[in-house]
Length: 160
Length: 160
DNA sequence: CGGCCTCCCTTGCGATTTGCAACTGACTCG
DNA sequence: CGAGTCAGTTGCAAATCGCAAGGGAGGCCG
Image 1 (cartoon, each protein chain N blue to C red):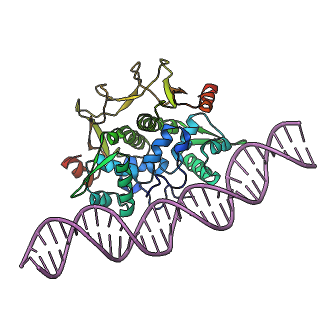
Image 2: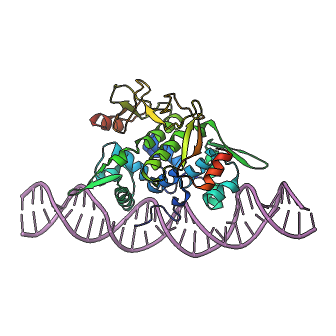
Image 3: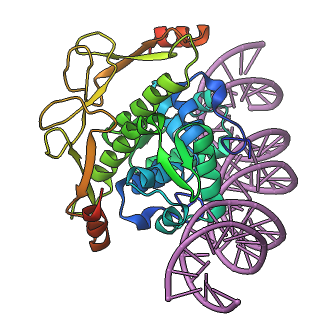
């Protein structure tokens, strides 16, 4: 299998979100990564846990391995995160925290993240790397970066 | 259209990531949200920008509106984020930052987030809400939360 | 007021992907 | 050796996606 996403790829948009989704945005892919993040290593274990069809799982593991997000150890096959894969942790964290807030029942979240450093519940927050203040959902604006094309520059200048 | 995702839903997993992806994990959905976050409001504008088919865009806007992530103002139709939608911003940010790091060309990222509060590039980081320290990709572990079922409790206790 | 245009979708139709079931090898355990 | 598990592959039915076309509502122009 060659194509990273069904039909038309997102890669033509000069957008980091689109390029990331072209790799991890397919159905099941982020849930496979959740399973690996939970410590599961084996094909059959992940398949049973997710209830995904084995051909689909085989495809997703192959794609993730091709992109260097997972590595496969043979005999018997085991899958592990690479550093590149571990760097997707903020994506899983962000999805989980939104789900905790808006989709969890009244019992509360099923899983809680703990900060190994201090041993307490982490409840990860975003802060500004420059001033250290907490970043809320309305606290960011956008500017053109060095990789922007002319059209993006104009649109972001006109207002982002 | 009733079903939120093709074929089998993810909702049976008691997992906040799965439940979130059941809502925003379909093809195009997060890119539609990126467009709205960029300030675009009109159907035709978003359709042109993404190159998505109009029936697909109509479906995604409807689903997001049904879930209270967007609101639709009529005559003429305009789409805006709700607070619930704005709370998805960390998801878009996390996807963008991974893409900036691993998929941007040597020119660098096309778009940079700026912290309105201090006016500098934000480069959002995760910190522990308890101790305030920066959270790296290996600094989190997991424990069962109040909404965990018996099976999840056992598995998380046996290891995280 | 009639014709033309744009915008916001809806419909129809292949092309592609997903999901299920069955099957193949390799390995393990008794 | 026989049974069972693991890690996929293959074949086919069903659902979804993408494109092209169309339709209705509103605006503009003469």
